[in-house]
Length: 505
Image (cartoon, rainbow, N blue to C red; front, side):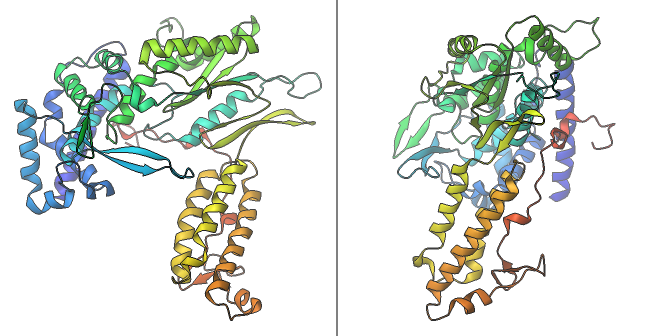
C-alpha cells in the first residue's frame, strides 16, 4: 500500500506541474478537461491518504462514518464506490455537521465549525489537488494566507520592507516615510458571506470544465445541519471544508487586482519590456511618487489585509470608501465601518496578532518594526496562571510541564522574529518559573522555600542552567529560542511549482 501511495504521489505531482506551467504560460485561457483526472482512482487515493492522515479523520460527519470505520470495512471499496458515484453523476455532497467551538480569550463566545463527511472531504481534496496549481500560478506575491510555503511572517516582513524609507536626506537620516498612512481592512463575516455567483464567475475564467465548476457549486450549496435542523447556505464557502481556503483566496484576490498598477503588472506588461510584472509595478510606484500621485500597496493574509497609502489622509479616506464599494460589487462582501480605519504609520497598527510600528532613531531616522503586542504576552501569562491553579495539584510535575510547554513552545516559535523578542521571552520565563514554584508550594505545603527552589535540576539542554524538571520532561525556556529577523527567502515554493529538471524537484 505504501508503494502504491508513493506511485500515486509521483503521478499526481506530474499532473500538478503540468497544470501549474500551463496556467503560468496562459493567464487568460481556460483548462477544459479536468473531470477525467478528478475522478481518477489515483487522485482519489492520494486525497484519501491526506484525509486519513489528518487527526480530523477521527471526527464523523452527519453520516457517522470515520476513517477508522472505513478502514475496517475496505478502503478500496470505499474509493471505487465514490468514483462510480462521481462518474455516474449520482454524487451529492451531504450537509456539514455544525459544532460550536469556544473562541480563545473570549469567554462565552463561540465560533461555528462545519464538519463534512469523509466522502465529501475526499472529493474536496481531489478537487483542490487539481485546482490549486492553476490558481496558485495566478495569485500575486502580496497574498500570503492559506497558500503552500507562505505564512504570516512573510506578510509582515513584506510590509516592513515596503515601509522602510529607501532614501536619506542631507542629514543622512531617513526622515520621510514612503507610506505615511495605512488602511486596516476588516471584512464582516468573510467566509460566511462570499457571493457564490461572483466566486463561480471567477472560477469559470480559468476552469472550462463545467462538471468541475458544477461540483464546486454543489459544495457551496450543501448547507449545514445543526441540532437536527437543516440550514441553507446561500452565501459563503463550505464550513470546515478542505477546499474552503482556496475558494476564499480565489474570491478575495480581487482586492489585489484593484491595485494592479502598483502591485503586479499582469495586463500592463508589454513584450518590448524586459522587466517582469513585479519590477514593472515597482517602477510605476517610483514614477508616481516623483509625479506627486498617490500610491496604494495591498498586503493580504486570507481575509485580513492592509493597504499602504503614500498620499494624504484625505486620499486614504476616499480610497477606504471606494474600496468598500468595490468589494460589494466584486465579491458581495462588506467592510466593517467600525473596524476598518485609516491609521497613521507613526501610530502603529496590529496585524495578524503582531504589532507593527515605526521607531524613530536620532542616528538613522525612521525604522519600521514588528513587535510582540503587550496584550499577547499578558494572555500567555493568564493561560499559565490558569494551568497552575490549586485545583490541578493532583497531577505530577512532569504532566504539568507538558501542559505548560505545549503553550509556551508554540508561542515562542511564532513570535521569535519580532524586535525585542528576547527581552519579552526572558520576562515570561521568570513569571512561568515563579508560577511553577507557587504550584509546587500548593502541592507540597510542608516543604520550605529553599527545598522547593533546590529541587530544580540541571537542564538536559544546558547543563549549567537549573530548571524545573521531572525525569526527561523539563521546563521549556523561551529565552533559549533563537531570535532573528524573518527573511522572505525562507518561504518555500510548492512542489508543483518546480519543474522536474530543477535540483529540488
